[in-house]
Length: 243
Image (tube, rainbow, N blue to C red):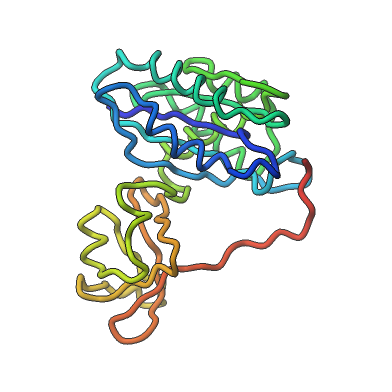
């Protein structure tokens, strides 16, 4: 069965690592029989009204587990993981749920967090049937942690930052090699061509699939005959974030 373990606001602007690394490191803390399938970064509202370290993103670890019996151990180990890597000035939050829980309130809350400022109280209401806890500072991280699980389970947003040997692949691979890893390729050219297995994909040194329709997908644009490249443009923001 699948468990979701989500972290938010576990870092500070000058601590030397982000919440993404903490989430990836959680793979080393899992109980016997559990495997971290992937880590998904979810982008939440980026607004001067929302205190954030840099981009207001939260991370969700997707864990394959043998059964329900490991739930409490996943929670205990995640809480200890936050404590071991705590930085003064951060406001960590932790949320843990399984695919068998009623996650609709988390989905609705997560979607709201992408375009509206929300509160801790709203997060607590959405997550009242799953585990939610704050681990320091203002505990504001509980907001993003709840949202990360809701959005990841919903499967219509997010960027995969850890999955199999994703980070070890060379800059240029074939489409077939990616498909072997259950990574789907999506042409965003006007004609949406099919991409043959033999075509070359340039990931521009950052292969980070998107979570689309609950599948891992890489949007690519044509870069010559039988060659494609991933999209590298990032959204720019015109205000200074609040610390």
